Length: 95
Image (cartoon, rainbow, N blue to C red; front, side):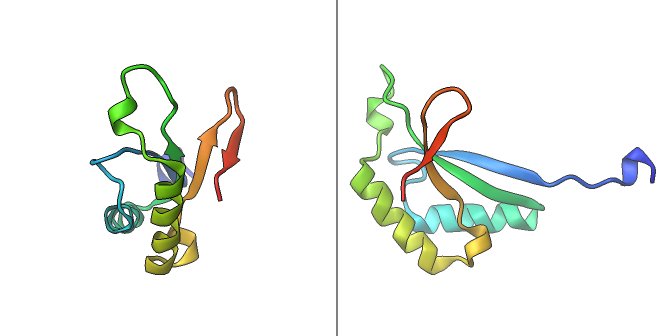
């Protein structure tokens, strides 16, 4: 098979940001659009607590509420894993 005919699975990683994509409806729309473009929603990262980004921080409680609603809106394969980066290659599932 020629290199141009090979297909690759693309995985999307998003960051949950207050007042940007902090709703199940928005994340559901994103997941559907990604899938229509042959991209799988893979991770939704909780924002690292870094200086200057506080205004975008979504609380863990709110993130969990969003995620639970998202699970009712999408089939399982379109629900990205909600994670927190633990440094290096380590990610911890939030739920």
